Length: 459
Image (cartoon, rainbow, N blue to C red; front, side, top):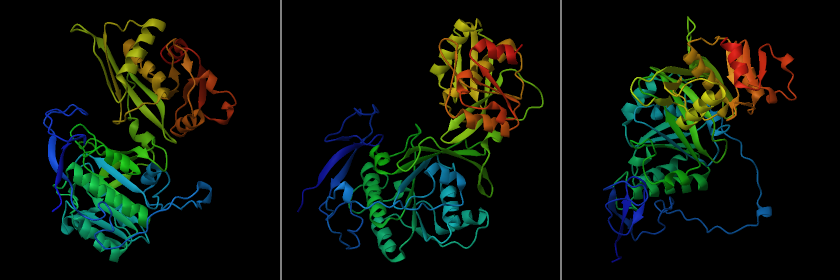
């Protein structure tokens, strides 16, 4: 009889140890190690063909110049937001992992995709819901042409691959990877060993057959994908479905993509009839105000190839409780501290004894330095209690010397501001080299220092 081998895994980060430890040396969490069986005397462990009896000849090395490369056409869905996030459509043989909080709409998104794929045989495998529950959700979705989508409720990967051999799907959807279990690993579903083994089997299937596989993944209370960290390294694309369950808008963000950019995002609105694509997110990120308010400025940011006009809200008030507060939502707090120091040193604004609160409307997290000027304008507007004209927008970076620095893709930013009806946009003077501003209906205001901006919009 073969010797049974066990080891200990951290249920938080997947760190492996030959013995039990009270504290994980990798993530620092306490009491997270669980003993699991990691070796069983089974042939071809991790091979999805092992359960079906199909063998595959061993791969042989090839010279790189002898490999015939033909770019495979991507499969375009009716969801333009998903196509953008994936880098132009679904890549054959790709393994896509979608993570998000419970109830955020992951299953609804993938079911909509499954129902909207025309001339594609789709197999939707659910380990969490019954067939009737999935049917009830499908009834709420918008009516779509008769699609070749088939539902299967199963958690055993061996049984799934037996069905796949006869069904031969063109797209496979797994909901979710934490509910799957393989007989090659003697541990419970959702454990580190099971998640890693099941993902490896689906990855081998995707690469061998060329069938794209979508997997739903749970997340921990800290917001990271549950399971071992190697899970994110194994898949081709990692998408994060974000949003507040108390609001209707959802953001599909790329955190890893081997076939495209990692800075793209898609925006949806959750309705009773499913997820609606938001084709012009700038309109929902800018609130409609009936009166002019101080502390509000409109900045231009880039997410991948998409320009977005976002609203920066600021509140500056006297600190009555000792140390002034510096709080930001959706914006790097350290960068906020830097911009406040620039305003005080270079602009002469006494912000040292003021509480400063900053918010990016719409729940976005912004890393683009091009909104620096909008942040400074919003802070000064609230400090002076003077409203910035609603027709003005900003797109520039602010340096430590108070200078206005150039940013990338300025033409796309100007065009987006013009399309949304803004009358003027403040940009760096050094951004206008080789650009004919006469081609735009919007007034392009080149500036080089902060005081030029404040004199133009606040005086």
